[in-house]
Length: 422
Image 1 (spheres, rainbow, N blue to C red):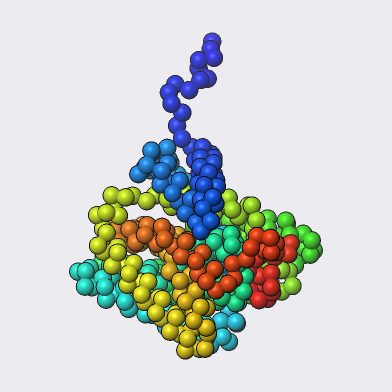
Image 2 (cartoon, one colour):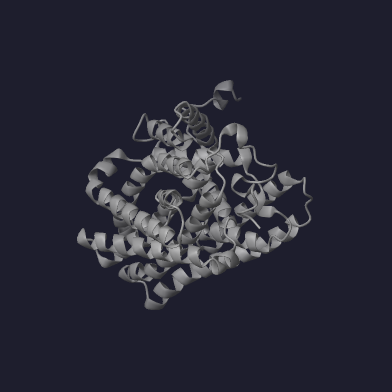
């Protein structure tokens, strides 16, 4: 005969994904509220600070095993953010905007060359140096999108910055895929496999994005103007489906989400699919992403790799800022706008972490060497990046007072003036 004791826990309850989800949201919201009390401090900083406090480097409320189990939540958050970034980029607009394309190429190649040279000076192998340089090209869409939304920013400067971040993330993926065969050959992959695997992951991601994007845009065309909530549900479903297919087919989940946004922007027609505002549903994933990022910061690693990380940070900031500012001035843009755009491209976060994890999954020994520098640098960028983006938006005059910033229903702040989405 069973007694009530048989149904009671025998010890301290084990953590699970739902507990982690609740803790992340509760403490992340608290951190955001505290940060909001400081006028110049973005809520992202509060999310991350709270994550650091409750993570393994703090009081340990979220142990590393729980953070590892919450990886799926982070993947979904990054997928939605990368989709939104890709949706800001129409492929034909890039082809026809010579200034945007040249600026992005100059900035990305300058960053790659600068970090490659630095890593060689620090004594890294050619393979490690090239991988780190490719990852350094990427910028953080999550920081830019969240801070811009928080400050209700809209205008040509934020539009240019969003487009540049989208393009240089695409270029980072391409450079990373071109570099990956070197890493695979060092891990004794057959030459053909070393060449074919990166190509398969990149091309496979595009094919998945094209297929899901085609179906999604066809469904979206059946929605009416006032059915924004249905388009939001459709977008979340499309991102989840594309991520699931990417995992099943073993292609790049990050590039699949970014490509899906670009494809949907290209094929959406009059459905207004990519103009959907994520609202509170999107904020949930932003909170989770940055609290987990803060919880994953290890202060001991940051101290250990501080010289290399600081050199990486300084060289990357110099390369990006100088290249973007110089191109902006050469094309006749004002000093404030050129400066603001250059600052908005400096943060580096989730995408870089994802590429480090991809490297570790394929070649663990190289992943550890790449991650030692990149993850320590990410900790620095995540600390000063959000306030820097907030300053840039105020510098260019596109951060709007709350009372003046209510966007039209169903339109993102960046698209309310009709300049970002077509």
